[in-house]
Image (cartoon, rainbow, N blue to C red):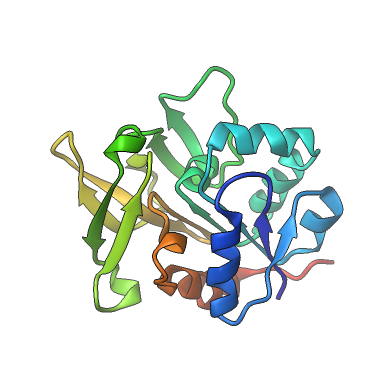
Length: 202
């Protein structure tokens, strides 16, 4: 299986390392031919608007969107969650997403860079112990559609519990950045479970 990491902007190197530690030899993808060859895709944390802009500039935005709609397994962390959301609150004018997850996310929901924090969260699918989650200018999920499975939630500054890890079919997303912690269980889950849904390239 060829797992690509969208290598336009963000913490690309950290995702590479996490995947390699899971026994995967990832490839950097940023051009149409590279996107067409992969069996699964990881969208890193970074700046969602910049990644979307660069994807359009490199001529891969529509291709990625089409492949996700066709069932390409994809995992997005932080900015990657925003880019996989069908709906975005507090978006900049004209902000585009690849879509694929029937969720509404709030951009920079937890605050600015100085408001970054860590929290222990439990994801039943990953077993114990709890996962140390790093939130950096992170989004949260405001609402989910009926086909979305909430894997983890946290109590947010607004006093409500918000989903921070979700899955819908071949799409997986987290508000936090597991690639920064050395805990690769999210990546292993993506490879072992979500990528089972990969459709052969004809």
